[in-house]
Image (cartoon, rainbow, N blue to C red; front, side, top):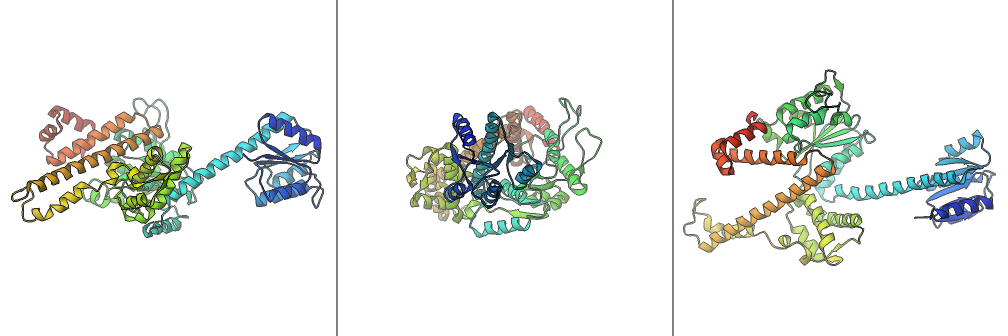
Amino acid sequence: MKPIWIIDDDQSIRWVLEKALQRHQLPVRTFGDVREVKEALTEDLPQVMVSDIRMPGGSSPNAGLELLHTVRREHPEVPVIIMTAYSDLESAVSAFQGGAFEYLPKPFDVDKAVELIDRALQETLRDEIRDAESVTETPEILGQAPAMQDLFRAIGRLSQSNVTVLITGESGSGKELVARALHRHSPRRNAPFIAINTAAIPRDLLESELFGHERGAFTGAQTMRRGRFEQAEGGTLFLDEIGDMPSELQTRLLRVLSDGHYYRVGGVSPIKADVRVIAATHQNLEERVRQSQFREDLFHRLNVIRLRLPALRERREDIPLLAQFFLKKSALSLSVEPKRLSAEALQLLTQLPFPGNVRQLENLCHWLTVMAPAQIVEAHDLPGDLREPAPAETSLTASTGSFVSQSPHSTANVPQTAVDRSRTGLDEAASSDHKLWTESLSLSVDQLLQTNQAEVMDQLSREFETVLIRAALRHTHGRRIEAAQKLGIGRNTITRKIQELGLDTE
């Protein structure tokens, strides 16, 4: 931490404040006139400046105010506390108009003065933390690829707009980061940004989450609760995974977007919504509209401006930049020196498919920060499943010629080794998919726990059962008994689960 500068021509004032601050283990530097301070400012800056108004070394008796104006103009991040024995209105007004952090009339209580200096000090430390956080956040949405430059231009054009935006892209590509950037550069930047994953909340709770509820609206509603629309008043509401929103809530959302009003659950008075809605999905909404799983009129309401995020494999030139940033970010969070990638390791990274996109790259960099033995990360330091080529692709491609004239299920005239290689490739591909799924599940759990979501186990269990049963019913063309047999559960169990999860209404 930089020292606190005490500037006063009265040696006793300098001595008293210096000793008081040193007792609190705070570094101090003292000055007797403004000329000394101006010279020192060419070499260093204080953490906090405490200056008398009437000082020698300036062009007027109020040299302290001149110094205040200079510091605020050239170094606005430095808080300045003004001291004066002339406790009149003019001095106070001049100090605050000049941008002083606080005004301290003499004589003052030393403990009160130290308390005031500490308050200014804490403010500077908070600013430094915010600056550091902004530095770590910005590169996450930077990129040199043409597709990313197009995206940045679109965000720039939308900066002064309140228009509804639909963000599409694969999971892990950074849709929420784009939504936050749209909010941060919009006229609503000083109002809340509220995000909600509509796929992570059970359908019977989602309505209350979005719109709130009145006391007594349902069993367990002990108090009135503000929903996410109300929490985002004046700001931006980000609806992630909008493609998974239940049909009944699609209707309510459409009404809000259409007339700008909504009701809390159990409420009778309409509430005006001053909220910009940004939605995101990894799904093909046009296809879901054709399948009658998403309302067409809601789709058109959301699809005013569409921004598509490219997958990481579509902008491989950004992988070195992102990897360097994530390694620095991980090192900062763990208070260690950042690792660096060798040319061979970087070349290997740029060739990987990264099905988990930017999120997968970030997780990999965090793994390397913890697990790589040396400061320079070599290719052999990467996880084993990344260093080896995907066997599923190579084995299937190698045997393609043998399968050309055969039916999809035939292995006649095909060498047994080719069949074995194909099966091995499929098994390993399935194993890789399983690992990716478990990693995604782990990330979802982390996100829910970090946002203090209630009943995480219940939420994820319902989603897991929903996915399983839907997939089984697709494979059996809706035949429940056969689906239950494939899942290894009883027919009464699958019937009960379908009712509990609301799948019988789909």
